[in-house]
Amino acid sequence: MNDNLIERLSDEADQCRNDGADDIAKLLDEARAAIERQSVPATTGWAAKKDWYSVPVLFNPYTGEPRDARDIQSDPQGILIAAPGAHLLAAAPQPQPVQQEPCPECDGTGTVAGSQAHFPCPLCTPPQAEQPLKPDMFWNSDDADEPHDSIECFLNDQICQHDLEVGAVFTIWQAKKLPSVTIRVTAIDEEECEAEYEAIEKAHGITKGTT
Figure (cartoon, rainbow, N blue to C red):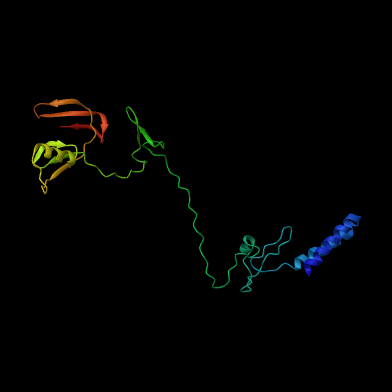
């Protein structure tokens, strides 16, 4: 009923303004505003319509106790008022950005400069998953002086050079070839039978050694 009355007062006020009766239109607007204020429900969760005056909720609708002034200021409509005994869920914490200092090894570039090339920084580069090593050198334990490229090559040699029989058992040694490294001899101690060297091309972290 109030909605119809408010709409009618609004139409009458517009008609009066069109006819030049601004004083009557102003009185009709004040009457409409007073009815709108009385029709505002003081319940939790109510959202005011656009251009409506929203009456703040001063009392807890569940307990009748006055609300704290700080709560009214932050939540005037009482949307966040919870019923006694209601199960409340904690807000999920927001992740805070971590301010990281630049890597002292590569200064945040991710690479370090070598003598001839750039290499991944050992401090800030994620470790790579270790790949299983595949052997590429094979020996018959009874004849370790003769390496083979594969077990198949060893069996082929046995067929061609010896009498290979079904059911024969062999113990095969396996190994993995490592990348080569070029070294330069830097000192020789003949009395101690020792020599010092340095690696010209880095391989497996070898930079300097003695033998």
